[in-house]
Length: 319
Image (cartoon, rainbow, N blue to C red; front, top):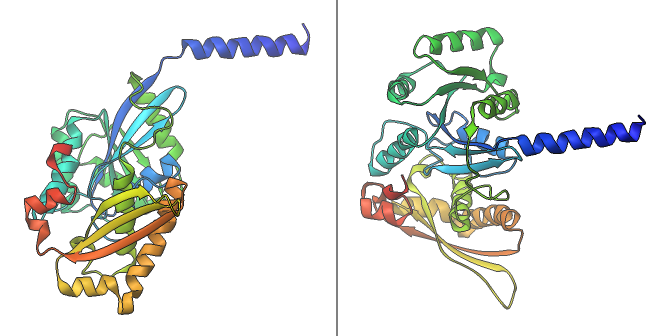
């Protein structure tokens, strides 16, 4: 037998093996306190930005789905708002949105930071996870920030609170052990359907992603009093036939006049920075040239009014 016949035998083996493979799929929820790295993990696994990120707590407000697809499996990741003690109707929506995923997924990733001790927020989440009839994997993130001895102590502490299916220490930012986490999730998948097309990476419409990118830039550029008070709506998004650019009109809502002044900046300097940074990301996502117009409007106490919360795109019928 020559080397070429051996090569063809091997190719035939691979073809037969591929035909005999069963397709596996499942839904995975990423749950934890605010700012533990849930969105960073989702973006790393997907290889691109699906969820916006900032160092401000409660950056994520909606459930964000990232669809990871290979030839043999499809994992639908659901990044959830950080679970916290709510102080308004928007907070209630965010927490219930996160907990609602426990009813609709096959596996839960409970993410905690390696560099912070277990707190009341973690304990509150653990009590809810104990009631859920779904396997829970403890994901200890930010291992790049701690000594191994401290990491082991953190893992031992959480293990005393609940019986986890697996415990995986990772660094979502650096990518450490994320391949191991992904392999474990794949092994735990069951035979199932391909829920989404191969080229689909999220189920959110482009308008939603555009609004989130604008909100992200406001979070990055403004001070502490702003983040929780803003919302962004995309009022129009269509191609301008004269310029051949995608013309986007968006409104940034705040609760007070002083906040509007901060976002506008001196002589409109801040809003121009927001627009420039957001446009860059939007053009990258759309693969097209964009003309972005933004307005800033005041809607007093919108976070406590269910009608306003609904109008801003935070709807309970989403979960």
